[in-house]
Image 1 (cartoon, rainbow, N blue to C red):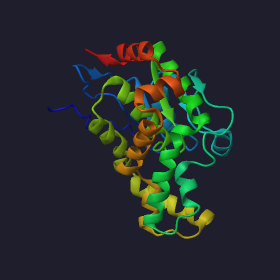
Image 2: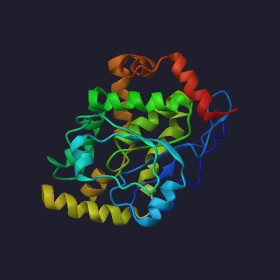
Image 3: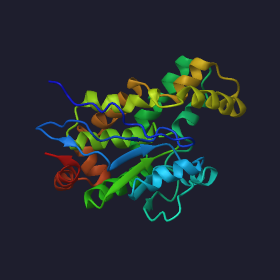
Image 4: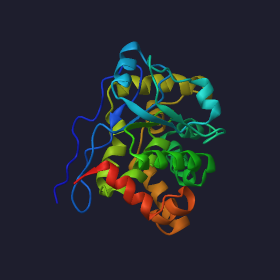
Length: 263
């Protein structure tokens, strides 16, 4: 079966990393995820005036910030004039650090960084702070009130898990969902971001070679598969996890799909 995969999901930005539309994918049973309603990115603390104009043009009704209190304090998002979207977040911590920074603490090379990221992804579905804001994310989507943007720090780990869960609900093929996840590695100005990340990681955790920095700052299929496996091994199925951990039952899943899929 030939599936539709969006070719130009990225929006032009200067200070917001990885801003893109994660709609457009074909779904099981026919139809396609609507575009213009589902956006994802990294944080907006470094947004330029042009970026703010771009964000204003999205006409967002909800922003779902998957970061915890300390992360939001360190990198407070800048909002455009007239911004009136509701910002949903968890009061507390959703991760001690952004997962790529948490993994950096004990990593000495690319192999150990890879192992640390796999372990962290496997543990993310058990983090109650993250689960709490994910519950709000799905409730917002079920309301069908307009466009939403979900983000974390780098827009790749917690955001990647959130988007993968939504794609599952909507019936996006797992391979297409993985394609969307891996697009982070091909985002505009990614090499510039990696270079910045190397400097940041070096100042905090000691010098990292480029391969290690790319492992920590990028995404890998094994990372997301670790989260998928963790959900299934702990709950038996994604649907059971959605129901028991995130309060997303069959009726809510059907409502979300009705709101976000064009027949």
